[in-house]
Amino acid sequence: MKIKFPVVGGVGEVQADTLQARKCYVEAIKRGRKRILKEASGEENSNKQGKDSMPRPELKEEAPVAVQPMEELLTVELIPGDPDKITKIGSKMKEDVREQVINCLRKNKDIFAWTSKDLEGIDPSVITHHLNLDPTIKPVKQKKRHFRPEKDKIIQGEVNKLLAAGHVREIQFPEWLSNVVLVPKPGEK
Image (tube, rainbow, N blue to C red; front, side, top):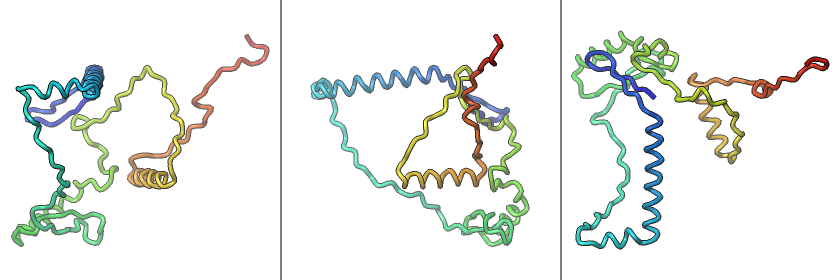
């Protein structure tokens, strides 16, 4: 994995070591199992009663708070007559400043990415996505999973959204394409 980000002198990048990440993950799993076994056997509870142990504070579960804007927002159509191409601006601006902001946004409306197709042409030095795949491993066809009818509807809805946005597309591969077997013709060696 690699993340690129802009810095003052150019582009910075961070590269992850997947092997080291796996080792850390396995170690964390092992430690978690040991802790669970200690708690189950009562070892850890007897150690907590020592003179150096401090009582744990009780954690109160609070309902998540929805983030609210600091002020009311005004909806602005960047292309008049096109309700799909909108943005929001603050309502507490002075009238002349608000008009300048709206005019600037409308003048630069070509900068906005309305769909994923508008994002074409981003310089790879700015951002790049790579799947972390091992090219030496043969691809395997996954088994078809069966879900409840309600869940199937939800999944189909999500797939339709991705298709409509242009993020995914349907590809048909014949079954024989993935299972190529060479068969000699009769009479040949």
